[in-house]
Image (cartoon, rainbow, N blue to C red; front, side):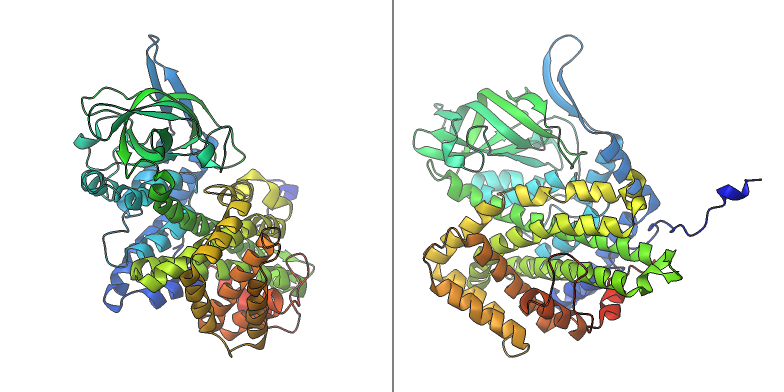
Length: 544
């Protein structure tokens, strides 16, 4: 019999054995809002199956083990032969296989494809975020490959297949394939035009050999990679297969894997090319233009990934406060804790609502929606990804010392939270991209303002914020130095517009009062006390 001092009381049951999709009211409403009516039931069924898996004890253990056993680089075999392979824990393969089979690389050719994929990406990321890197790269490679119809015809069926086949073999013999990307070099970083990797053309049309290095290469065990290199005609996009058609391995020397803050289950490598065979994608000198479709798609995945981290952080915090008692009652009923939870829930709901609106715009694929995405994607990528880290830290604090312990899972969320703000262009890159669109593409600003204007007259604080944004846009003096401020305001106004139109009144009221009306402090938990905070928190509570 246990000693009386070891009696366990007032500990919160784990958040496990639940449907991650159905427990998220905001996500469910967004899917219903943007789905084609005839597809909604099927989409819900897909997402419920994925949500049940993501919330299961088995899959949560997969995620923990994949994170606890990072990938291992093997440059040579036992005989000294160069092999350049990365070994992953079996649970990495379980996670990746389920992601691919669920269609998370298949968006471009099916009805409501981006919406269904985005919602699934948001759900499945909550099981473990690291393995979604090759999923994202594979999905995003499709628009870049379409610059060469022959390459697209060859590769797109493999990239969108719901089949996961690990191992280095000729891609032509596989039913499904994955893609990675290599743009960054040590001397250039985000300034890809400073790349020095050289591409020398061969006699065969479109074929080259590459010599150079990549400082960050995503998903190095993928079947193919899109990379940038300097061809005679300038910076150009290339497809680099891992294994050549005759079964020999392409020269792809993995120098080391990065030892990262988070994203521990995923391999990010430094790669050397030395006579590496490549096929040109698009025209010489148009590399950035060719690969920009891939970059834009991965930026949306950064927004989705951050929204997923926020949602899981909020779900854990609200779940904890529901069951944990302190100072004479449940934490969730304490006014100050309720304020903190409501503030976190607002941030999460705004992120999810915006992310799914962007996915729906991809599905619509009209000229107006493409113009809207040109501004909305970098603005959302800038703001939503930056909100993930402070939200994860505050959510961890809601669990107190228990949240600081690895077993809670909260430290993993916190370590992962800065990543999406860095990947595919950090904050300044996104802000400058918004400025380029404002200066060069007037249709993008018009589409953005039309979207925001759909909520005009519904909330006086939103109306004032829109007016202030227009004033700021009219003054271009010193615009680069204040670009972050401008992009933040654009993202908040867009989120406010979406919530005013689609969220319950208590949510829209709290968002506009705090984020747009200025009745807010510098930390979470500083909402006006007169708001209906209990309803906001209840809306965010996961139903187990």
